[in-house]
Length: 322
Ligand SMILES: Nc1ncnc2c1ncn2[C@@H]1O[C@H](COP(=O)(O)OP(=O)(O)O)[C@@H](O)[C@H]1O
Ligand code: SF4
Ligand SMILES: [Mg+2]
Image (cartoon, rainbow, N blue to C red):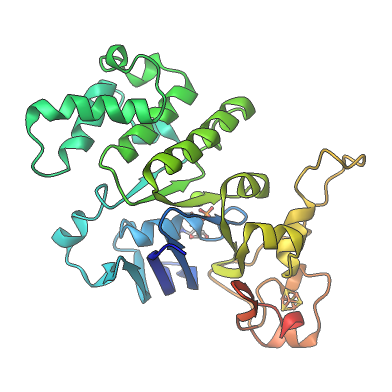
């Protein structure tokens, strides 16, 4: 098995607002191996993006703060680095692709200039090596005629092509870990499928580790080797993708799986989970899924379940498996 590149241990990230403390990430642990894609999946507002921003230490300050935990990247706890040391990791070692490509591209600079700026972040690269690197990043993301695209601006490109450019920028410093935060949400189905295939191709060529963030279990099945299912600031189940789809154990995972459209089912009505996730500012005392869980018992309301490893690499936080 390949070595563990990133290990997140008991991470707690809160927002201190005038209305109260938002426990956006409330004690999560996971690891990512070299060359592996780890999926973080869960409904909107469960803490996926805050997890990603915590790893890169890009939380909006002063409200957002990491209050406990470790983020160990290749043996170094990133949370102990000073600002300058941390900057050396961003882009070069770990890079991130955001959900909306338009927010990551600058409309007034050409594509070539924007990728060149990212390439220059890598130290000691002579000027004459910048353009070949830019072109090789565009090629890696299979952008047609890269030489001619250098002078183009974001508005001249289709949504799918812009998202590839964002991918090229993220890959241009040859990072070892890529965090892709719902990178296909803004794309239509065909372009999405092409983009996902491209990701797999990039991983095959570079052996990069990926944290793939999504709310879509269909995308998880297609993209990820292992998965953490997030609910209200916690990871409630972790398993390999095949194990998770074969034998999901947490009632939230089971409910989410039931809401994925399946071609082999005649009944087109989809199951959806009743109710809403709890407010992260005012969490219930027991299991956070209790108000929506159809198999809850009395203990669930009173005490929070701890995480139990039920088989090799398969962990669940639910009283039903303890
Ligand atoms: N700047 C902020 N101030 C206060 N709360 C925030 C801030 N950013 C995110 N949050 C809260 O943190 C929680 C997790 O958000 P997020 O990680 O963006 O969810 P996801 O990416 O899973 O949709 C949400 O409840 C959100 O409202
Ligand atoms: S601990 Fe109880 S309420 Fe929570 S998911 Fe398990 S059965 Fe449902
Ligand atoms: Mg998000």
